[in-house]
Amino acid sequence: MADLTLTQAEAHRATRLDVLLLLIAVVGLIAAPFFFYPIFLMKMLCFALFACAFNLLLGFTGLLSFGHAAFFGGAAYFTAHAVKEWGWTPEAGILLGLVGAGGMGLVMGFLAIRRQGIYFAMITLALAQMFFFFCLQAPFTKGEDGIQGVPRGYLFGLIDLNQPLNIYYFVLAVFLIGVFAIWRIVNSPFGMILKSIRENENRAISLGYSVQKYKLAAFVMSAALSGLAGALKALVFQFATLTDVSWQMSGEVILMTLLGGIGTMVGPIVGAGLVVTLQNYLATSPLPVTIVTGTIFMICVLIFRRGIVGEIQALLRRLS
Amino acid sequence: MTGMLTAAVPGRHVQTREPRAVLSARGLRREFGGFVAVKDVNIDAYHAQIHALIGPNGAGKTTVFNLLTKFLEPTSGTIRLDGRDITRLSAARVARMGLVRSFQISATFPHLSVLDNVRVALQRPRGLGYQFWLSLSALDRLNERALELLESVGLQDERHKLAADLSYGRKRVLEIATTLALDPKVLLLDEPMAGMGQEDIARVASIIRNVAQDRAVLMVEHNLKVVADLCDRITVLQRGEVIATGDYVTVSENEQVKLAYMGTGYE
Image 1 (cartoon, helix red, strand yellow):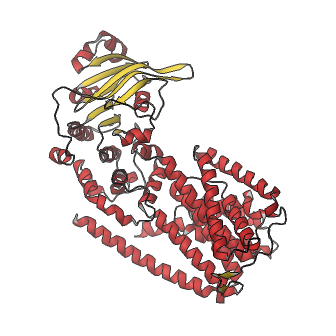
Image 2 (cartoon, one colour):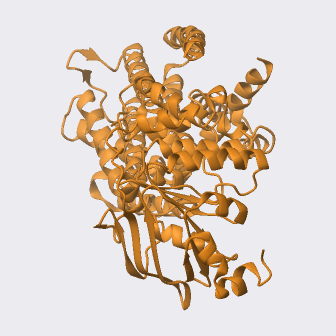
């Protein structure tokens, strides 16, 4: 038992280093809008949250969804519509996006978790494509145009989100809350069961776990948090369009997560930051964006299979 | 070791003189397309007894295991656990009722620590499954029992290793400790000693003997020496059918068994 308490102390030391790094990162993010273009930073934060939510499913439950754009883009539509057409406050609109995406996750997850592996991925893709065509045809989404000119409004009726710094700090706060929620889910008794399902599903069943319920719960949580990211994006860019519900978006979030490192907390954030930065940088250069990101993706898969953060962690473990 | 294992399960100490069938299957049958993999199998596992299921490769032993634990649906037949019909229940449900299995290929959670492997098994019985809002330290109250279980199989010093880093034999032992965490009424072990060295076999045999004092054990095993030493009853399966049931002497003198499985000249 003495040995056990010792290792707990070690665990606390590791946490202290983590807390230090976390503080540096948060201070950096608070200072960032004074050095970089806020819209660019907010785009990064939205995608980072999206990738973290996706990683909750892929990295910590072992389920590869190819339909997460439906939650991201769906929530963007819900929020944009509620804020623009119904005059909801931004926080209520975001809440609607979160709940709406969670509801979609419940339906899609309920159908998809009955199958495993590639079949699971294909069902999520098929359902997301159905939702894409729904968005293309439904009157409230305005078809090819999308919902344009979404007002950012006043947060709690008080804070003017049209001020760049106000909306930036609002987005940063929601991002931090979202990432904290994911961290808590992963490092909880529930997260432990998710990991055991990822590691050996039959064994988890033989220990009496109804793995379908756990998978569905994880799917809904991942969908709702992806929705939170999409809802934020609708407010930041003030529009919701078909791009956000297209299958390319589902692919992009997979790319970000793999690039950063599946099953690590920070990996998806780094991956999202890298992809968004590249897209931004290459948009003004003569190089074609998709070919460059595709090449980087292939190099990563071939050389750093654990992703950037995954490889760094493995290196640190080997050194210590 | 024995004292600790039994002391940890109060109320299970009632010794019945007559052996009591905890798990019984009647007319168990499973077809795959036109192929009958398991045909009208009757099998009983008795409290405090070790029952071996033997038979040549492809006889349907693992299929019987999958049927009994509901990883496969039987085409027909009934399965009763403590008198209750479990034929149509889910695998997770029968596990919760105390019918717990191991797998032929060692089934651990490879990237979890040895301690966490056992704690995962303890979580559900202690009501710690869906709490996504709690910190992991909520699981610390499982440590004492988890360590007890690890000590009972001699794995306490390796508790911080990843399960993937254990030797093959130690993985099987971990698997048994994990299974025992559920305090099962019936333990089904699919080739628990396959691929083990002599030393590990002796250790696992003594662990199985200990755990069987308080529950029914049904195991698939190829090593006939182990079966002879360890098991109270033996059922021989051939081409999906039971050809003999009884103690080792009865079974080994059965002409059909000699012919079909052990060869006429066996001992």
